[in-house]
Length: 319
Image (tube, rainbow, N blue to C red; front, side):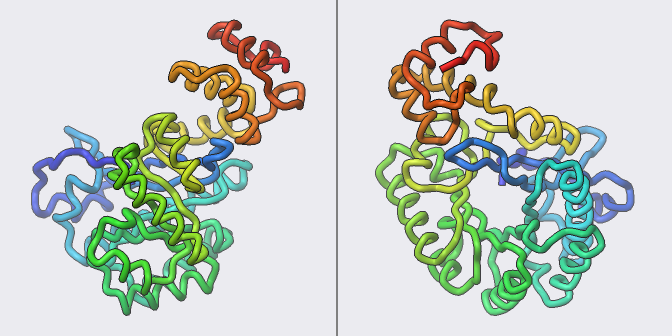
């Protein structure tokens, strides 16, 4: 989950009518595959459009009652599922994650998930449900709900993994398909403790058959370290901030399949960090990003990209 805005004074009853007033909306943050840097999914993120500010949940969620949380959760589920159906039909994003308040976890809520998938013609595997470890999850109820979702084919992720109440017990008792590594660990990469914790989470996920996603990735160096530690996916401002649906579609078309543009970006980012042409070529080859002529990258190819200037295209990248 991306950083929230600072707490913003809201009236105690303000959020309760936000759905009816049409003030709630969703932004979407791309999730990329680390080896290739290609987008593979998005996370739907709730926003409250007030007259004076666009608020993230951290600014108002503590104000919500259980009934209000369920109403907003239904809005998020329906809106996100409908948008994903549009993207899938257009050949764009095929997979989406939503955040779920622990107060929603009950058999009745599971039924609404199945109904939303069916009504929008979505396969169960297109949806991931994120449970936040820092919220107190009722483990027996949560485990029952997570197990039902997974048996149906829906993914279940533990958000902010490693930071919450009794972390190992949560990971051990909840059926899960994904661990999301908290941004706090990512921001401290290079600190031996943070690196060790990331490696432990990756190893634990591997042993339990889970995928790993790192949140809050802001630099190419962080992405490289996470890739070296074996993290599968990542999201963060390095790739994209949370953006509206229309902008997300443009982002997807621009980045997915535009290998030449992606390669140029990687070359320049690594060069700016002091990497040699040989190192950059090795990174591109390891990530499976082919040179425009279909061959492997060589140092000479990298140097041609760097000398071509800002307007370089695939024609200026011949290997």
